[in-house]
Length: 195
Image (tube, rainbow, N blue to C red; front, side):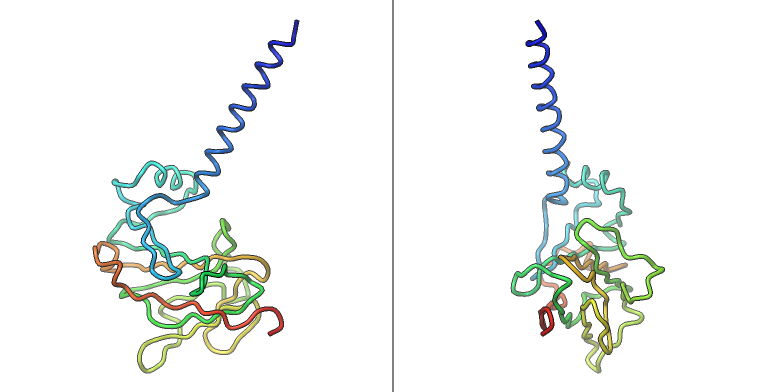
């Protein structure tokens, strides 16, 4: 007597649960289409425009993050180093080179899907173009490690993978069609574990 309603209830629960689960996985899988990859760095220049695809709009609504207009800024993220190996807090890295032209840039490391670092941290969890030390040619050398390093040091989460986020503010490259020709900083692994 209750067999048919119970089977219908189970089928509906599986259908709705599977649909919600697959939607959440799709939103976490990508920011949208139109990614530009420059070495390990990736950016989505159209994600904050009116021409953004439906996945980008859904991702934007789900994340609740402030997005910049195309003339205001451009956000690059990196989850791998130059060799394609995933960034890990158990290893140390060296970030070298120049950033594309911008009035200001910021750099921070956070766990994948994690919030940006807190301003109350005692560690240097974020750097910007105004405080980083440069050589005579204008390039920089930043150590990415969980433990202190001399010179420019960016503290990364101590265990597990992390993501670097480089935001360029007031940059002419944000509205440029020549994004492919940009030179981004290199991310090179210098050691892992106790090495």
